[in-house]
Structure formats: C-alpha cells, structure tokens
Length: 133
Image 1 (cartoon, rainbow, N blue to C red):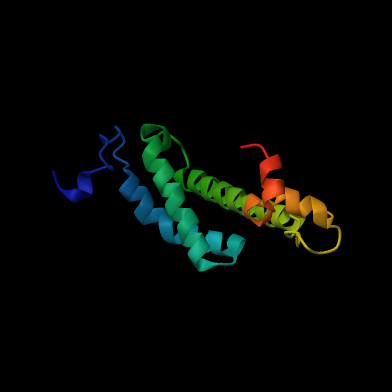
Image 2 (cartoon, rainbow, N blue to C red):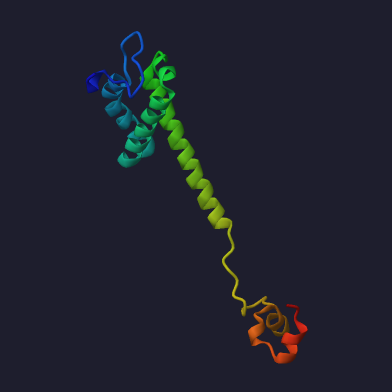
C-alpha cells in the first residue's frame, strides 16, 4: 500500500475522499483565511494544523461532513478563540495578583510577633524553651 492511498491509518470511505485530499485542497486557503483572523502567520499555521489533527482524530465522522473546508475553518477559529480567551484570562488573573509584601515594610507585624513567628534559631534560650517541639 503506497503513501497516497493511506488515510492516516484508517480505511478509505466509499466516496474515495481521504484526509490527504482534503489537506491538499484546503490547507493553503485555510491558512490565508486564518491569517486574516489572527494577524499572525505562525498562529494561523498552528491553528490550521490543529484543525487537521482533530479531523484525523475524528476519522470517518469528519469525512462524512458535506463541506470539509468549512468544518476545518470552524474548528480552527474555535481553537484560536479558545487560546485567545485563555491568554486574556491569564493576563487578567496576573493583573489581579498582589505583589509580595515586604515582611519588614509598612503594615508588617510588630517586631515581637515577627520574632516569635520566625525561626526559633534567632530566639533566646528562654524563648526556645517556651516554644513547643
């Protein structure tokens, strides 16, 4: 069996269309369309590739679709939208995070509390005897 007749490890459907045929016919158009959406050629190529990987994983369900290119476009745009949303939410979460507090800065615990809460190595023998453990 030659490479051209392989449908990514799955038997060919009855109409003869393989994922390779769909790839050859659609990949460049899909990348150009996604470049308009994403504004980045690298991102467009990544999302197009991801759409084809998902199509290969779905097997015959993808090949049974009437318009393969539209299904790939929808899948790749959804993948881009999901990635964009995760990046946006990550940036928003980082913006909400408070910077670490300086333990000796304003609003810090009084000096006597820091000594007791700190490591026992800095305490006097009398203080260490009072600490459990």
